[in-house]
Image (cartoon, rainbow, N blue to C red; front, side, top):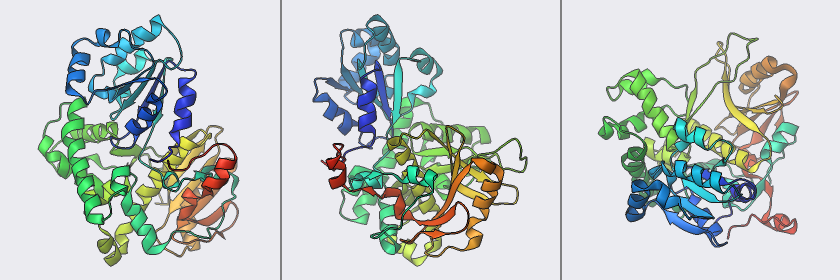
Length: 423
């Protein structure tokens, strides 16, 4: 079992908030985490049990009545329970009354989100970050805003980096010994998401076409979203294609990233970008294997970009920095893969490159972003397949991809009393 970044945040939230909801993909480790917390005297209830689910759906108020310090797993299967939880919290307002998990984002339902405003804290938990696998506490984001990244003595590069990206972050996939067995698990997972989890949250026409739709989206991961093009691939309208992408976002298969822009500049693209949230699932959906990537490394770029984007989201959950992710693209096609805006308005840019060499031209997007930001631009990096830091001018550098999971070793962390070692 791995120590997770969000565990401390969940414990802190339970100390002062009546309801805490952990949301994220199915099989990302949410149940393992809350069961660990159940050892502290919390009762555990899962709505994956059909008998329990039937009871919850038939009488939500009666189901919740009398529960205290309870864990309810997979709350999206009976969303009306959240209204009963609101009533229970209003009658007896105390911290840590309910710890919930959800494999679909029930907060997209307006009456649910509004009913628990001020009573619930929501924490997102994605599959394992590389730093969690290695038992490290990363400081990549903090160092990036300070412009103080370091070269890597034991940086993961070349074929090893490719293998790592293909792994993704799902604990059960990582635990399998061969690429074929990992992809078997990931294919089964995709089928389960599309057939079961989507039915929990919506009526989906052309359900049998969804696997093809996901494959089309996989071909566009890391690109600007073209809803008409992917919708036409399964014979539905632009509006239906947009709805399907929204549903896949609700079950944490994909995410769309809004563009960063400023009103001072009109020549900026305002179309969102799409990413798969797990590089292992993305590779499986596209039929990418290690041998195929070795034979055609041009296929690695989009996979690597989605991997880095997902890693950054996971690091955000471990950081005290309040950050919002964007992408950047101007009308001259200069772009930055990931833009992070801090709550004080400061900006960093991250460009991802699957090559072991970096040239001055690779910084054109970052320079355009710096010009657009002015004094708000803190730093820009090109992450690349190497172990060395190379400066490229004022507030610009090339940095190793393995900077993402660099951090204090478990021994150092333990000495400070905050162990993140695998357990």
